[in-house]
Length: 267
Length: 218
Image (cartoon, rainbow over all chains, first blue to last red; front, side):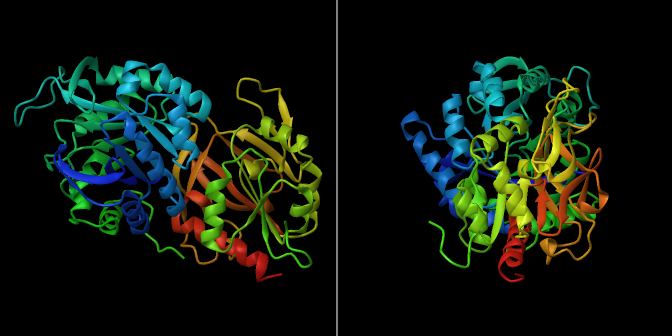
């Protein structure tokens, strides 16, 4: 049985890690490679770099980050953000990234997923989906059959009119090997993942789903991996601000009967 | 150029079918720098050999034949020096592989060093099998797994698995829907289906163990 994965996510801009609340009030938070090494040694199962570099001219900065990271860490890592061509995918993968994550570019041209899957294999292709509830249930209201989620593009800025479940199915058909699913409603709230959204997507596709957005405590991670049925959890602020260490997370999950890879030291 | 006289290096076989960089860096971190090569004499003179591979079995066999490596790899293994196949590098050691699930009759011959077949993972679970999975050691106390936790997790990414004819060559088993052989060992010959170079400290420990088998237990 596969272990449930704990995946720290680092937001990178112009080759530096940045921290900020929903990309407002962004502050420099150091060298991405140093952070990657730190989380590898801490026991992360994978890492994600989300490149939020605004200008295409500075795209090369993330390639350098990938090269340097591949020199230093020995776990798989994924790069997402601004990847809009097979050539750029190849550049990132050949420099040591294990997977690439597509979001807006895949919405614009879904054939980009199949082109990447053909060349590099589905296991390299992650499709990231930013989901927002169209119908927001009131407190204490039971699940409503009309609950649905809309896909947003451009880092959550623009509604696309597309249904999340339909898009997830299409992404899988086109060759996605994994879905990175962010709830825009939950993101930044620290009040838990949107487990209803997670379970709906997990039940609809047969590829792994990574839960993202909303983690505030260890119980939230358990919920996403049990109620939400997610295969992995993306974690950012609860790690970056030092609230928990990966060893704490894994110990707790193991106590709850969730299969996790134990943290061991490098030789 | 390889050192003269007593060889004191590991040859990392670069047959053009693997992203050699990550294996090279992991070996370096785990022990020492390997010599990346596709030259017969450099492989022959090595103290130990690591043989990685990713991608298509048929294509890899074609490349090995084109580069004249088939016989060299056989001789190297027969010579008794420690040999580690990784992923497709393990699968290629077997007699044959199913080309694909749709063309059942079509079988691609392999290096035929380990009797057995390479087969597509059974339906019912997502294929490829990607992620961290448990590896259950079958040969207790084997030096390749020295110092590793019990039933360690390793990182897998593959669609095919090996099915050795002789069960005693099984070094480890893994469960994914059903059980499959995730590592083999027969004397100096070892192979792993997972990727030690992507398996964090567990992977580096395994590579360090291999390094020790090459240089200490000679």
